[in-house]
Image 1 (cartoon, helix red, strand yellow):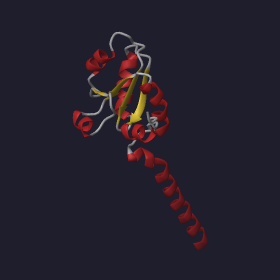
Image 2 (cartoon, helix red, strand yellow):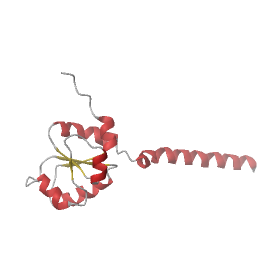
Image 3 (cartoon, helix red, strand yellow):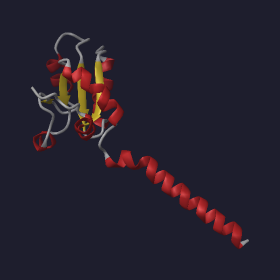
Image 4 (cartoon, helix red, strand yellow):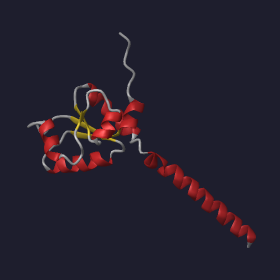
Length: 133
């Protein structure tokens, strides 16, 4: 019976470690590096770059060229994008959650070429090196 309990405890401990390992990137809140990598070619080709975090977060650090429009300011987002509902737009926040809400609203209004680059940290971590002139 003791041997069974010991094995059960080991299995539970491994499950806890595995769970923590799997959710750690979510808790860290830096965004998805794969999505961020996909965003860089769009950003480099001139997509409108929108930071949907608060003004305070934006002031603490943001990507060059980004405009700051908070995620729930749909009218301001629509004005920034303009009349072209197929204009390429890359959004980011801290984790991608607020972007997801913004994108859902914009997609329901007919916008189609909008991308969730997730978090600023992921974008900074995956930013391609710029060649020296």
